[in-house]
Image 1 (cartoon, rainbow, N blue to C red):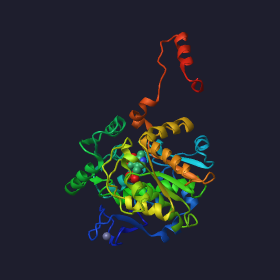
Image 2: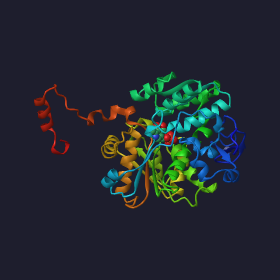
Image 3: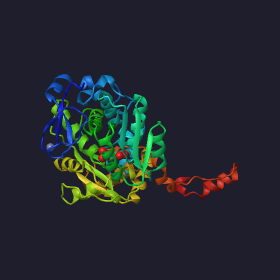
Length: 414
Ligand SMILES: Cc1ncc(COP(=O)(O)O)c(C=O)c1O
Ligand SMILES: [Zn+2]
């Protein structure tokens, strides 16, 4: 059992539910969230206790809704936070950091959420781990199910990149490639979850799963030397990640790890081919109008985002912003990050870097302000997108051809 969890609570009407695999309020259909006894956590936790913990998300066990002693742990988390001087110089930012979560075990931040969800699924006695995925989640579910000795059945749109399909299937999962977009996959999975007793990490396990994303807030504050950033730039699909980073920052204050109020402005990054959260925020709306995605950033292609409203509330209450990047800026962002900082990110990271550029150009981020851009997935999974922006020199093995090829390059590339 998780010692500090009190119940599940409806985010809309605050009705309380027992800690079970439930995700929707019976009365108002609002989403359920795990609730904690913050006073008890405050008595138990401390910066020192966290610092002495493992170099994984499980150092934050006091704020996670599962029994960490039985964690399904493939070393998610405690990824590098890098001061990005080269990229900062290009963008005109002197205090820029990158949270490089592309180096997690299955190569995205989804290992954080699935590590928590898989642990809870075993606590509840499930034998099958499942999900509706835009790609990365399926990889993380496969990896954690393998470690836990569980069966996994993962669902994703059939048109995803090869790196996502292979990266999920390799773990022995049953991969169901659905002719349709994520929103259709998700609808199908909700139906399946009603008739099969499977742990769908982002459906019936969602209240527990989503808590794993908080660790991307806690970890950044700890790695900054127990400071909050002034700005956080976060890629948005369902909106859970952004709203949970915000929740994590605020919980640090609630349990006495940090002084409040949290100064961080939360900014959403989406690509224009699927930007319902950015568009709603920029129109001053809280309700998100669903869209039909058509974007190269497939990992973020959720047209009807379950946590969109909560992401917008976090952006609004933090004084943050939102930026939609043009489709061609996705690959440009990936290339800029790789060339300046040596980090090969996937499309979601390209969206974040180009949104960071856009927000900076708009004056939303000041040169000296402490800014963290979240790089949440790995470029080796979406190579198709940048295949035509790299140009190897093809030669036969002799000096003449080498020198001809070298001299054919532009002077800056020689
Ligand atoms: C690499 C990457 N970054 C960010 C996100 C967005 O996460 P969320 O759905 O919690 O908004 C996703 C979602 O699949 C993702 O794959
Ligand atoms: Zn309710």
